[in-house]
Figure 1: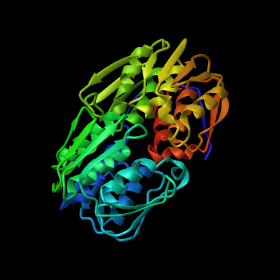
Figure 2 (figure 1 turned 120 degrees about the vertical axis):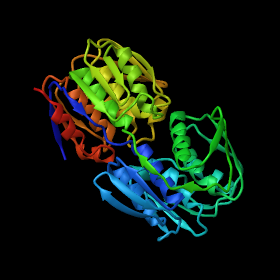
Figure 3 (figure 1 turned 135 degrees about the vertical axis):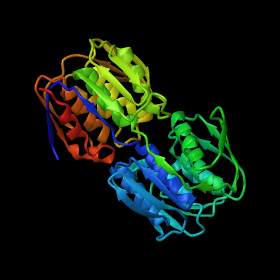
Length: 414
C-alpha cells in the first residue's frame, strides 16, 4: 500500500494503542500462570497477534471477550513442535527461553526481516542452562529442547535486552536458582518493565545495578486481571506530530511509566515544544523548534520520532546511540539518512551519533523499507513538507499501530 500524506496542521485528542512490549510480556506471564488471567486494553497489532499464536501453540487457551480484552487460561502444554514468531524480535528472544522449559524439541522460526536479525546471544547461555540447542548459524530457525535448569551464566547484553527478558520470564519456573552476570546491559528500562510485569503476576526478580540478576527457582506465576497501559513508542510519534504541526493531547499514558520511550518528553522540551502533563494524559503544543542533543542509547526505538523532530527544528541536532539501530526492521541509521535525504534534510552518520540539519522539508517519494517506525516518521515529517510525501509500503505500520494513518487523519485541521 502506498500512502500520500499532505502538509497540514493537527489538533485534538487521541489515545495511542496499548504497549505491545507490556502486552507481549503479559501474554507470556498469562501462559505461565496457573488459572485464568484477563488482559484488558489490548490492541491486536501484528506483534500482539504473533504472541497470542505462540502462547496458544505452547498450550494456553485464549478467549477474546471483546474488542480489547482477552481471557487466557494458562499452562505449558505444547500443541506443536513449531513456533512461528512472525516478524517479532521480542517474541522470538522472549519465547525461546520459555519454550526451553519444555522437555520436547521445539523449533522457533520467523518471517521477513526477522530471519536476518541476530540470535547468537541466546545459544551458549541456553546450553549452559542445560538446554539442547540447534541453531542456524546465529539466526533463525533455532531448535530448543529443555527443561531449562538454573545455575550461573553470563549474558552479553550489548545487542538487545530481549533475550535477558526471556530468561527472566522463564527461570522463575526452573528447579534451581539462577544468577545471571550481564555485560554491557542496554535498554535497561525494558528490563525494569519485565521485572514490574513479573511482579504483577506474583514473581520476584532482583538485580544489582543491571550487572547481576538473581532469580529464585520454583516460583509460580499467579493469574491476574491486568490493564495494559498505552504505548509510549506509538505515543512518541503522535507527540512529535503535535510539536511540529499544531497540538495534541494523548490519553492513557503517564510520565510515571517504566517504558523507555517516555524519554521523548525530555527531547521535546529540549527542542522547545511546550509539554504539559497530567496523571493520565500528555499535551504537546508547537513552538519554534531548535536543534537539540539527545542520547537514545537506552531508547533506540525513538530514533525515527527524534529524526522527525530534528528535521523540523532550526539548526543542528545530534542524537547518540546509532549502534543500536543496525538490527532493527531495517538498518535504521542508514534508512533515516537515506529517506530524509529525499525530503531535503541532511543527515550525517559519524561513529555512534547521527547529526541532523533541520530545514525545509520537500515533497518526495520515500520508501518505508518495510519498517513500521520509518513509515510513521515519514508521515509526521510530511505535515511540514511543501507538498505531499508519498510513502511506499506504508501498510507495515500494522506491526505496531494499525490505525496510525486513520488517527493522524482524524487530527488534521487543514
